[in-house]
Structures are given as C-alpha cells and as structure tokens.
View: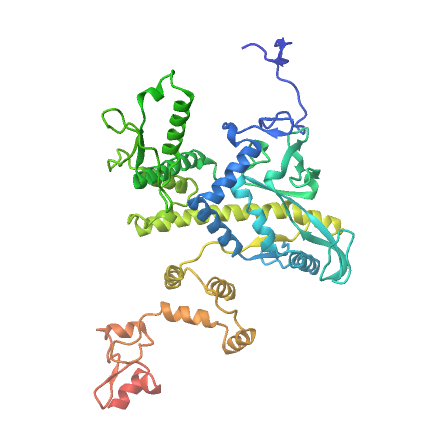
Length: 528
C-alpha cells in the first residue's frame, strides 16, 4: 500500500490526499449546514426556507384543526407541569445539601417568582419552537431594589436585596428574523432582527439569549419544525378543500350554460357582438346562488322564432368518480400520524381499539416529555449559570431547574403492582415511598405530628403494618377462631405425640394451642 503522506495536491480545488497533522484540541471539520450570507438554505423545499417557510408553518398552525388541536394539547399538558429549583447534592448516598446550596436554591426560586410575567407565561412563548423548529428569547435582567424603585432597565422587583434577577425571557418573533451571525466554527453567535413595525435592525448576541430548538443537527439554528413531515399532506389537503368547496357550490347551485349567436364567436364579429359575448361569459362565470340571485337578458330570436340567446342551469349528474371527502380525511389522518397525534381522530369513524389508543397516547406523552426535558436543559445550561455568575455565586455546586410528572398515572394499575411487590416481599414501605404515592395521587401531605405519634407506637410505620396485613395469610379456619401460634399445629397431631395438639372446651369447641392463657398441657388438664 502506498504511503498516504506522500500524496499529490490539486491546486485548483485545494485538496490533498495526504493526511495532515492536526492539533487534537482544535476543530478540523465543519457542520455541513447549507447557509449563505447569514441565511439558512438547508431545506430541500425552497418554499420552506426563510420567511416563506415561517409563514407556511404559521398558516398550518392557525388554519388546520388537527394541527391546532395537537399544538393546543401539548401546550395545555406542558403548562400543567410543576417546575421547581432543586439544590445541588453530592454523589454520596444520603448526602444532604449544605446551607450555601439551600441559599442558592432559595435565590433561584425567588427569581422565578419575581419575573415581570409569570414563568408559565414565558413558557408559552418558548413553545413556539415546536411549529417553527426554533424559538429565540432575549434574557432580560433586573436589579432587585424593591417594588417602589425602578432600575436602569425600567423594571421593578418585589424583593429588595440588591442582587440581579431575571425580568423575563421575551420571545423575538420568528418572522422578525433578518439573518443569523455565525462564528468561525459554524456556531450561531447572534440573531439579527428586523422590527416589522419600524424597520429598525437589532443584533441580539447569543450570550444574552436562549435558543430553544427541536434538534441541533448540522448546527442549524432553525432546528426542524415538528410539522415538517406533514407539509406535503397539508398542501394537498388545502387544495382538495378548495375543490370540495367549489364542487359543493356547483352541485347545490348547478352550473350555468349560455347560448349565444354563432357569429359572436367569429373573428369577424363586431365590437358590440364581442362586448356582448364577454359580458355573457362573465355573467355565467360569476353568478352566485343566494337570496338575490337572478339574471336578466334580452329576448333574441331568429327568423324562425327560435331563441338564439339563452342561459340554462346545468344540473350535476350526482355521484362523482372520486370521493373528495374520503381523500380529505386520508390527508388529515396522515397529518395526525406525522405529529404522533392520530389518537385525536380515534372514534370519529367508529374504528380503533381501546388498547391501541392507550399506546398512542403513551407515545404522544413520551414525545412531550422529551420537549419538556430540552427546555429544562437549556435553562440549566445557559440561563442559570449566567445569572449566578452575574451575582458572583458558585456555579460548581449549581442548583438546577426540575420538572414534575408529565403523564397521568393509572392509580389502579399502580396499586395492583405495589400489592404484588408487597406480597412477594420485594418492596419495603417507608416514608419516601409514602410521600411519593401521596404526591402522584394528589393527596394531602402527611402531618408531622401524625408521624411522631406513629413512631411513638413502635418502629413500624402505619404503611409497613398495612403491607404486613396484606401479605399475611387469611386468619382462622373460617370458624372465627384465631390462627395457631405454631404453624405445624394447623396440620393436626403428629403420630409420635402422646397428646392432642389442641384441647376441647366444655362446649365442645376446639381450642388453639395456648388458648386460655396457658400452654397445651394446661389447656388439656383444664378440660379434664
């Protein structure tokens, strides 16, 4: 094999077949994103590039019911999720946060509650990255100097500690994008915005912004819209809806046909004849059936008294060769499948198994959780450390933004599962488990005073006692008697024993071993 280092160079293309020696700490390649002069041209469909693509995605979101329902469902589910700040914890098991960690957590919690608009209001703007693929938000800071003072940015705060907090994360609208600014490594460093109202240009650096994207593939700052896979279906759906509307109007109103003298169609026709033909054509094309419909035309006959100028209503023959409504429903189903929301159409056509619907909903909820996780990751990677650095706080033990349960838990199924684990001895109830179960079931938290009373009764908690009661075998033999202390006693007397296992009381009932406060021999003697 020839030595690859002894290659040739193509001076025209600047390409060599020799393998260069590079610094492993430096970037040697490029993302491969198709862009020019700050404009991304990576999509294979030209109509989806730049402002045209943004407007099409907005049209799809606003005009198509399936897409609107899908995006609305995602928004309502995500806005219902609980968010909180969690302190840093060491990796050791059972490690507790330090006082400094708790102070940092409390500070970040206060920043979330001290926003000019609520966190959920800001979150609504963030969710714009779903239909458009990306969402750019400028980070606004404010100095917390109390509710009666205004800082240099025009913000007020409910807190007076002199620290810097968040004022908000306002959206910089997707259709206001003018171009991107990229760094030498291909990463985006700023958004250039053009205000559609004033025409003013603004350069918003990435260091003062948050960029939410559905994907970071190829380093594309515009991500990829969740509606991208259903664009073709939507375009055909829009066209067939227009066909259906025109067809329905034609079928209801009928189609007009007009008769005109033959000489009006000849090139030798006079100007008056040509004008009359044009007026008649326009009348036929534009007539509408409504409360004021009607046409008045002159009565024109030939020498034999045959009408040579007339307008008639051509009635639709009835059933079409193609079912336009079925075609429309097919495209709507394709759109629903493309966005993992085809469960929205289940039941409308009396088809679809219940278990299949549950599986589709679970898949949909999983996709939503992935979006929520990406929002939390961006906040933890950029928003929180930047704020801590502005206040001179420690970022090596940084608190993080967390989110709660996304999907609803089937409590009946969970209860059956826990029962099986308890009975098999594979799960030991404790306070942490009880707290979790109360939380997911939306039950009130346990009162600490009740906990103290439970501990005073013994080492086993009420939940542990309940689990033992569930796992224990049924009591007695159906006669109401207590079970024997000795499991072997329930099997009857051993042939080698001299006496009976149980005694009989004067009423003829068998006594369990130990009944009456004594042992077996005492009970036997008492019966005698």
